[in-house]
Length: 165
Length: 376
Image (cartoon, rainbow over all chains, first blue to last red):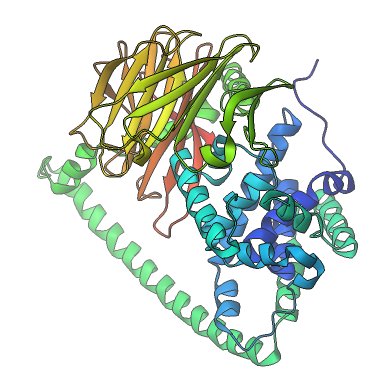
């Protein structure tokens, strides 16, 4: 019996993982167009990758790891810096925070976190990943992830004036 | 609503457009069919379309300048290579004539570098047998799927903490995750056993809750740490050797070393097993039990290092070489053993601040390590 899981057709793969990847990218960039660029990069890299997937966990871990890499590369890219510097550019890609209703305060609070804290916060709260898993996905030490989560929670607590973040 | 619930609500509303996904599916299918030629062109066009015409012009001018600069750099490189080749040729002639000095500065710097990267190790996967590769791949697979450190603990709605024993959720008694998360904590999982270390509020004490029967019963214990000003300021790491014996290390942000404690009766009594202080080991990650050996992975000065001990008292370094041409630093994040295969997760740091994770493997019980492949 083969130790490997089957390769997925593109549409099935996207159905399973596109939302996960897109949300991680969006949590980092807070911009629809940029999140789409990162998502596209990740899945095109996936097609090029010659990897025999041993489990769905393996496949998902790879996709998340590559997404984190792409997101980090993206925000340091000349294209992104140029856009960020051009204050007169309307940020047409941003989701409408009004759509989040009474949760828009949380949206703004997370958006105002420094970039390095956004993905750990997202992976912890939305993907329910453990500190060890986040350390793996972001190629950092567990101690660093703990510090990042702790500092991000402190900031969120102050911004949201909530006891339990 | 808790923060987690609000955040989850927000994220559930953030989904990629169906039209975008359809276009992406087509691109993926085309890339798969063609082997990936020319896919980046459409991506670039999309990015340019998003910009105003003025900025496209600015970008184009900048691009032209860049091209000019790159061309000039290439010309300089070609000249440099030519000069270098000429010098080398002269060097070879001088060796042939017996006039080369074997103690030249080039030779000294190559041989004395602790972290010189052995290029032959980078081709491990090409040169070693396929059965060895299969063993390493199987070990990597296990590392992705094994239970160590995997569980999540907190149910933030109720504040209750739990551990997941392969599908059966066991609640940890009397702990509120909304308090625990604000302080250092550590844990390890071994088969039916689980131990959780948390801060109870006493700056000189670490509290433990442990189970050996998948959470049916819990034992509480305490470690008094008098020689530390405040354990709340330290990083804690836990590792089982067996259900009764485990290690705890404490590491502060300010100190390079760490203190190691051990218990052989599930935390009832503790002894200080040793300490690593006054050394230049930093960023210690975790003690990992493998047979009768204990490991600490981390960083020495700039580069990765693994520390190994047989007794928890006397530690020695095991070298891990990374490509110093590519990486300006790095650390070892974890060490794991599966049967005869040792796996180390090594992270290289590039000059522009990026990190790249890699697998290193060992086939001699961790005495020597060589690059295997990129992570994951």
